[in-house]
Length: 245
Image (tube, rainbow, N blue to C red):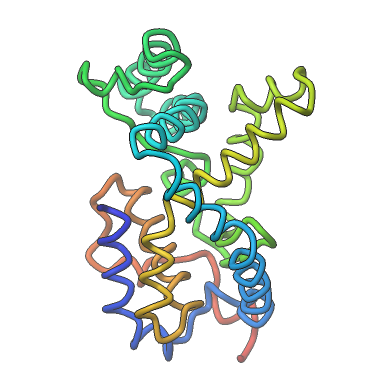
């Protein structure tokens, strides 16, 4: 629901954002090409697989799969809880991880939420934002999609804090590879509604995706209470950094 609200907000803002000088996107020409390539690959690979996955696999089973991969990301949240000075939340999230890993059968069942321990979403990009770092340039990575200079380091921290990464290093490829593939299919399946809305309603899918991503990041950094007009916040770039465009 929250993701859908940000998508609707981005649509409302789309007209203004398309003509606004966005100094946080100095790589726009390259980003647009990368975005088109990513979209083309997605349309012939992940999207149809995700659609088939949603059609064949019952929703309760899909929920268990999502819970499993969400639980594997909890330690990254715990780390960044503490880095952001949220000690109480950090201990709660650590407890959540152990409860779901044990009582929840490896995280397949979200037992902790029913015990009053809701899931939080913290990552190193948010931590840098809390520390005062500007977003920096918006970047579209091949296959990985939207990101920014500030959020890029989380690609490392989210990997090394994920137990599945270390398990994959010790298990045979015939175990690690299917798990990785299922993880990507699960992620794409969760985004089907959002991507369909973008394709149907967005005048400029690239701008739509960029602004929805930026708004969601602001929402997460400020724990659901972003400034009244976050697009006017300092992104760490100025006209002097890139010259006249």
